[in-house]
Length: 174
Ligand code: FES
Ligand code: FES
Image (cartoon, rainbow, N blue to C red; front, side):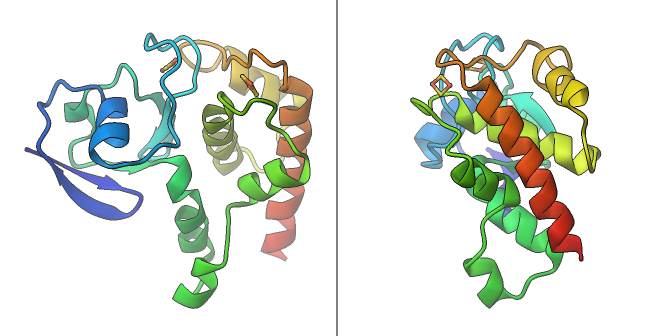
């Protein structure tokens, strides 16, 4: 049995310790945000945050998450609410600025890759308050094990959404 904290909730998982974290999230914990794309750390669709850092859950064994905090797409609103110190009532009504920006910019096309895109954007914006376009490109291409791939070519929309999320986060700080 492995204990992990998923989206702020402590969970005991019965799967073998070498099970890919992605399988645990989707099959054992019913978290369908992370997607199975390549299974080889080559596309980014399975990304989650592990102690705030983006990882590819398809190649990460469950044991690597033991005692650590995993945040999935489903956990972004609670992550934001905690960072902002929102009350329980306000937290229940909030979504993460990255998700809000994705909606405003109508970013997804087929949507399959967008879990990883929003996770990566969240990681970036927690690290860099106002990223330049060059920093955005770097984050999504050379900073991880592989570029985040979108077969539909939504890259310009993703870039616009990140710039919009930056504005939303800055506005929320006022
Ligand atoms: S499914 Fe994990 S990187 Fe592609
Ligand atoms: S929106 Fe279709 S793969 Fe990215």
